[in-house]
Image 1 (tube, rainbow, N blue to C red):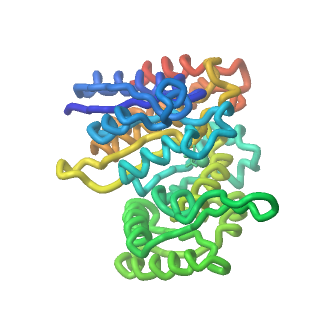
Image 2 (cartoon, rainbow, N blue to C red; image 1 turned 45 degrees about the vertical axis):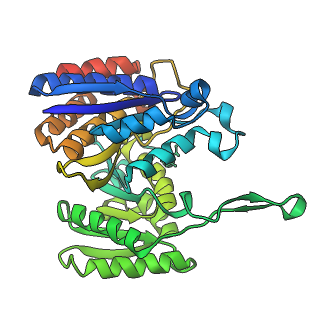
Length: 360
Ligand code: IPM
Ligand code: MG
């Protein structure tokens, strides 16, 4: 099979984790006889520096033409005070919207070998295996009106959490279908005791639930969900949530996995005529500028995103399984970066990459 993939390393630790992810991708392609066609592009702060835009037109066109896009991270402190259109994050948000990847899947597993890496009690975390389905192209991130206006004490900042029935329906269907392939439990997260948009969300999710009588649905308020994730994470299977809640809850859930460096994600949209997803694959972690360029970052979130790409983007289940098995083997061997609090000397980013390749 031919795999045409756009690689967008981005900012901070993005390039170094992406480098290892690409090495793993090359190895798997070789092993399983696929033809890899890689192209590289600019996004985020690095793109602003070189072109003035966080999402240059050639990057956008290449992403639309590729079978899948693998992204590192965006964000640099030097742009903290930049206007909204010249912020690195704007590039990523623009790309997600342009690709129409409305469903962001963020699996969270407590790896048996990493229980000590989590600050939570082992017995509480052990066995956690959940999937956050985060709506990715609507809600507070994109709603209008938005902006800052006025001056003095009347200066106003506005953002709007907006969802249409159609947007809620399509993400709910994705979540219910995924729950069917797992433990058939779905927790839909909202703030319906306060927000109208959440009241609509809950109503529409209930309507969609009628198509999935075999999936057990619970509604949970976002504040309670934040607490339950720590108190009793095993109660969760699929967690369905709007964009902003999902952003927050997924960083919190990373504590269950031992480190945010472990979490991969897949952002998917509609099927193309070829049957493939238009997908964007990126680790959940950010650009971690303080770690950048030191060969210390954990590449497993990026590598896990490659596995997700193989599985969801290309339907290559064996190849995805080979990558996931390699991750497991490397963890078992104790080849761990500093974030995973290894007993001995922490492994470098590139050492983890080499160990993975040796397993595939
Ligand atoms: C994430 C990140 C992004 C988001 C940022 C970098 C725009 O935090 O993917 O979770 O908020 O979606
Ligand atoms: Mg985030």
